[in-house]
Image 1 (tube, rainbow, N blue to C red):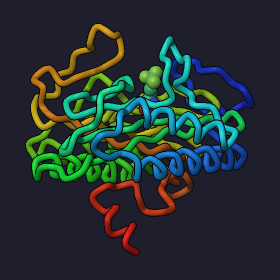
Image 2 (cartoon, protein in one colour):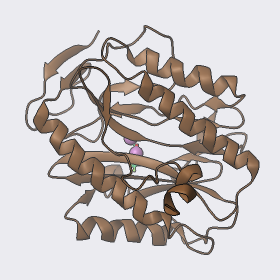
Image 3 (cartoon, rainbow, N blue to C red):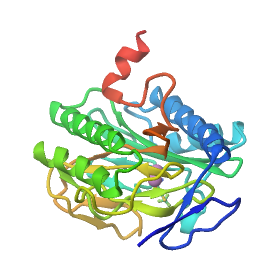
Image 4 (tube, rainbow, N blue to C red):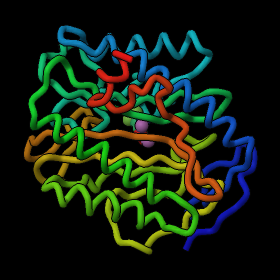
Length: 280
Ligand code: MF3
Ligand code: CO
Ligand code: CO
């Protein structure tokens, strides 16, 4: 069972205690979320064939510095970069490298910027040049699954309703949902209660209440859901080497739905819609 408490300034994570945030927390998350979205927007024009993920990581670091923000992953549990860059069959936690991106790659960039102590956590897909129809379809399924998860994020529903919405849809498309990594509460803590599974059963899990702040970040594979961690201790890849995609928003539960903190003002969140947005 979980307990809900009014969020206190600086409160640490406590197992099974869910913090309910007020207007101050929502204002803090709006600011952090918007800056995070802007960092990911900035990277759109740089994520091209020939560029390395280490260069993209450096751009993200400089962006954070220029805007008075701190990348939450830098020195987090021994991690040494500002972003996670997960390429093709990498599911998540890919480490930026010097290898040049190639036409047809699909890349996820995940960044968390801390602004005034609040964490904006978001990730998106970046198609590198022209990509295959198969890769496009995977990205489409992943984005649609996040949208369905967000639609289920409202008071009275449960965390299981979010997971069920995502899983039912993804599996109907003959793709699979990764079980090993989950969405999470956040705020002044990077990772807080509750865990948001991207699979599950309707009506199960914790009830969603106004003031909860968490991420939804489904990882979807074209093959089987199973992952393994490489010897670097971070990189998670699909066991069957099938392609994997992910997208992530930070959001807060409101009186009758939710507020997404990490939307792109420029309409660049979904790469399959980005060309339209850029030509406006
Ligand atoms: N940003 C990731 C998330 O969505 C966490 C990355 S932790 C790291 O929760 F240490 F791998 F960077
Ligand atoms: Co996250
Ligand atoms: Co993230």
